[in-house]
Length: 333
Ligand code: HPA
Ligand code: ZN
Image 1 (tube, rainbow, N blue to C red):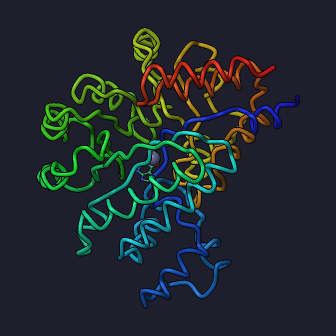
Image 2 (tube, rainbow, N blue to C red):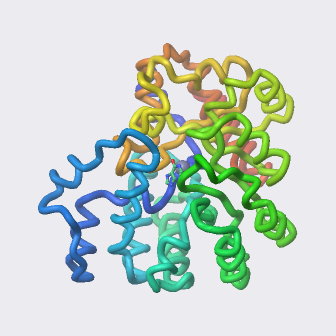
C-alpha cells in the first residue's frame, strides 16, 4: 500500500477542530437564507476569495462573522453533522470537538440551543457512522476572565455533556495566566483542560499553560521548538501537541510546508498529532492535512502510523478504547 492509501486506511482521532470552523460556504448560504440574515458576499466564490489570511486575527474576523448566521438548534445540528460526514469519509473514528459558546450567547442564542444541536449530531454520528465524540467548550481569550467564569457557570448544569474546557481566539496579549481562576474552577468540577498556546504566541505561553492552567494537552504548541528546555519537558511528560499543518500554512505561522516542524518534533519524541483546526477555511480536513505533510516532509509509513497512534493516546477515550484502536493500527501492513 502506498502512503496515500495508508493515510486513508488508518483509523484516526481528531483532537483539534472548531465546529464553527467547519462551516462550508454552501451551508453558510443555505442557513443565512433560511434565517433571513444578510451576509456580505454575493456568491460561494466570493466567500472563498475572502479567505486570504495573513495572520490569526484576519482569519478570526471572518470566522466570527460567518458564525453569526447560526441561530437555531437545527443550524448547529446541520453544521456538526456535515463535519461528521467528512470524518466518515476520512476514516476519523473519534473526534473531540471545540465550540465557542460566547460567540453565540453574546448574540442572544442560548447555551442550551447550541449544546442541544451539537449533542444530537454527536448521537446520530454514533448511530449512523459509528463515530464517537466528545465536546470541549472553549473560552474566548480576547474577552475577560469574568466572562469566561460566567460561561463556565452557565455550562455546569450540562457538565455531563462536556468533557473539558479550552482556550482559543486571539493569542497575542492574552496569555494563559489571564485565565488561571476559571481553569482552576473547571478542574475542580472534574473537567479536563486544554489551551491553545504557542501558535502565534511565544514558548512562554506554553510554559504558562502547563504550570498555571495544568493542561492535559497543548493546542498547536509549534513555537515550543524555540525553547529547548520546554521541548525536554514536553517529551518527558508525554504532553500531546495538537498540531494543525494546513492552518499553520494558511495563517502564515510557517511560510512553506517544507519548513513545518511536525516531523522534527515527532522524531525527537514529542507526542504530536495531526488535526484540521478550521477545515472549511484552511483548505482541508484530516486526510488533506496528512497528505500535505506527507508530500512536503518525507514521512515514512512508520511515521504515519505513529501519528495515528498518537491521536488515540492523546485523546480522552478510555484506555481500553485506546488499546483497541492502536492494535488495529499496528495490524496494518
Ligand atoms: N487559534 C485560535 N483561535 C481559534 C483558532 C485558532 O487556530 N481557530 C478558531 N479559533
Ligand atoms: Zn484552533
